[in-house]
Amino acid sequence: MRMNWERIELNWRHYKGNARRHWAKLSDQELDAIAGNRERLAEKIREVYGVSQEIAEKQLASWQGAQKENSPFK
Image 1: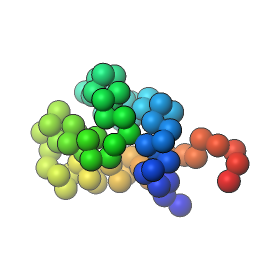
Image 2: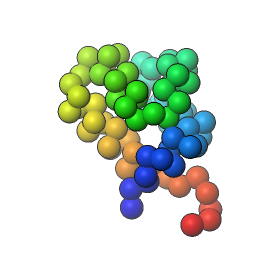
Image 3: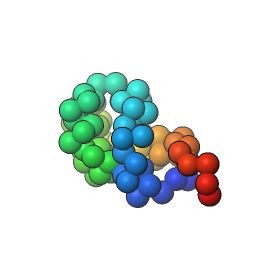
C-alpha cells in the first residue's frame, strides 16, 4: 500500500533524510524550505536536476512508494 503524501508532509523531519539521500543535490536548506510540500519538492527536483515535470513526478511516485510507515501502530 502506498503511503499517502499527507503523512509524509506531516512527518517531514522523519522523511527528509530519505529524500536527501535520494536527491543528493538538494541541500538541507532546500529540503527545510520544501517542508514536505509535494509540489515544491517536484519543482526543486526539476530545477536542480534539469528534468521534465513528468520525470520529476515519476521520481516522486517511486520514492513515495518506497517509504515505510514510521509508526508500529496501524
